Every structure is written in C-alpha cells, then in structure tokens.
Length: 371
Ligand SMILES: [Zn+2]
Image 1 (cartoon, protein in one colour):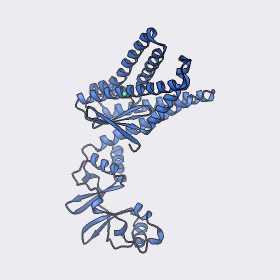
Image 2 (tube, helix red, strand yellow; image 1 turned 90 degrees about the horizontal axis):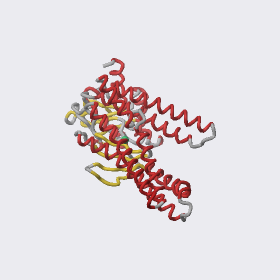
Image 3 (tube, protein in one colour; image 1 turned 60 degrees about the vertical axis):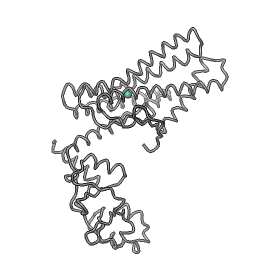
Image 4 (cartoon, protein in one colour; image 1 turned 180 degrees about the horizontal axis):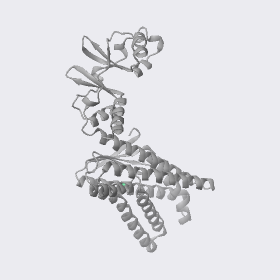
C-alpha cells in the first residue's frame, strides 16, 4: 500500500491506484498510439493518435473500476464492509473486512465482476457496429474496448484463488464439502497449477522466439504469489479465530534497567541468554522496549557510553495490547507499525511479550496437532 494514491471515494469506498498502474496506463497509450490506431486509422496525425490513445486507456481504466465496483456493491448488499479498492497492474484488489459467510454469497460476489466486464464488452461491441455507420475511429476505439473487456472478464475467471474464478471454484467446493478451509486450499492449489501452466506456456513461447511470452511468465508469477499469499492469510486468520493475546504471549521475557549500557547488554544478556528482546523497567515501572534491531542501529564505538534508555522504544511510542485483545488484532498491531513484538499489559505491568515468531509458532503447533 506504500506506493498507491487515493483517487476518490465512491459509495463510501476509498479508491487507490497502485504505482504499477501508471506504467500500464503509459504502456496502453503507447501501444494504441504507435501500433493499433495507426493500423486502423492510417491518415491520422501523431498528436491525434496519442490523444485518442490516452483517452481510450482511461476508458480501459474506468472499465476495471466498474468491474471492481460491481464486486463491492454486491459485497455491501450482503453486509460485508468494503474499506478500500486498490487498482493494480492486472485489475483491482478490494480490502474487505471479513470472509464471506456462506458459499452462495461468495459465488455471487465473485461472479458479478467478470459478468460486468462481459456486459461492457457486449456494449462496446454494439458501439463498434454503430461506428460502421458513423466513423472508422469509433469502430477502432469501440472494438478495442470490447476486446479488452472480454480479456479482462476471461482472465479474472481463471480458476485460481484469489482471482474471481478461484473464488467461484472455492464457493462450489465449499458448497459441496461444507469446509471453507479445505475449499480455500483446493482453490489456491488450482491457482498455483494454472500459474505454472501459464509460466510454462510463456517460456515455451519465448524459446520459440516470441518475446511476448514474457507477459505470460509475468502473469503466471503474479498469480502464483497471489495464490500462495492469500491462502496463508486465510490459514492464519482461521487459526487465530477465538485466540486471545493472553494465549499467544510469552511470559518468559527478561527485564533490564534503563541505565544498563549497550556494551553490558550485549555481553551479559544477548550473548549469554540468547535473547533478542528486553523490557526496560525502573523500580517495576515500564520504561520501554529494547530489541536487537535497536542495538544494531547503534554504532559499535558508542556501545560503552550508550544506555538501554537511550536506544529503547519509549513507553509512549509502544503499541501495547491487553490479554483480552483478539489474535487478529495482535497481528494487525504487528503489521501496522512494522514492529517485531508487542507488549501485553495488565494495567501498568507487562504480563508478557508477543513476537511475530510466537504467533507463527502457535499456528504451527495447531497445524501439527491438526486442531
Ligand atoms: Zn474481479
């Protein structure tokens, strides 16, 4: 989300564009202005080709937006909150607050996007027929938009989670088995298989001398990482459901005084006790947290003169949780601030620490126990 810009708000949903989208906008305009339009409209001057290239690209952009909006509106109608939509290189990703509750809801939510693209495609195709009686430019623009929307609809129907087609597949398996986790796994594996098939086809094409096969390799790679990532996310979310911070926390943490020098900390604590995180307390009062990263950020020559109090993340900047905080919120806290651990507080006292590794270990344990 770092390189994306907010472009507006529709139906209470924030719309963002990812930086990669500008690359695609320029690429589309360039292809249209230098190859597609010149072949259809040979008498047009370059400036007009570029202006119409850009205009057509913007309509492609609006088509992707309409596709995503269709998903979101159906989601909202089913009581799912859609926070934001980010438009990426190959479409959009909606930030929805929760997983769908039942298969039919997921099916309708997923299928309505490609359906919108197909309807738009049919609409632009009709436009191109009208253009036959009006102007060759209209035919060129409309038939291009019809083709792009058709491709957009078909591409999104590829049966790999988290693509729309993968969601459709997941909804069908979910309906058949009644098991969301299993359905997600099957839809994700299907996505990975398709990704490899696409990459294989792309590599074959490149070997046969067709450089455009690189596109397929790229799309396959994107699909594969999306399939793996979204499955892991679902897995973690289902594993952490109903788990509280109190269950995740590690109570065996070490405390150090704030006037301990970094040199002493390294010699007496980090090397001897193999710990990476320390809670800084003076007379039982929490002052802050020091972790290995803070030590690494301090020049070695300063270690004898610098104290833990100098390099710690002070208490006011710490994002703490209580033992009752849900596992999902703990994960959010870890991700939001990009920190490696959060302290669990009971009143003014540190009851435990939750590191990323604690969460992962908990999930692994539950996986191993098959519960
Ligand atoms: Zn879609």
